[in-house]
Image (tube, rainbow, N blue to C red; front, side):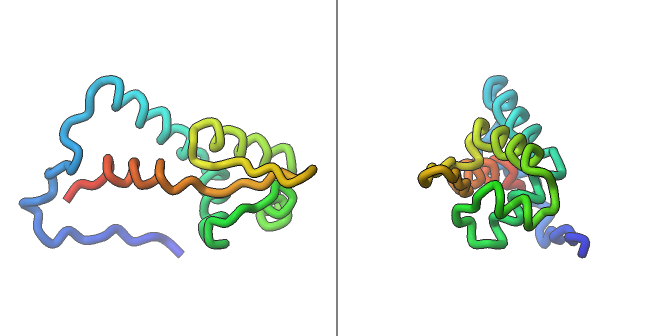
Length: 114
């Protein structure tokens, strides 16, 4: 299933950024965050987490769901956690990960055009 772009109903509002122009520091920060998300496996991991209600999921659970190796999943989870997209939750010998929605809300605000 291919995502369909949303049609703009009022083109006069197309360029009304809700946050205003970005500073140099802000643009570098957001570019770094978008780079983390630009990896297809990371987007698949996020979609798996979101499909499960954004609740905590272990590396083993994701490995089974995505049919990828444990080191591959762990690597991508680490990168997303370091960027602030995910939260690590230690539970005994198992570490679970869940989405931190606050950073996604911030990116949504930056991308809100129109």
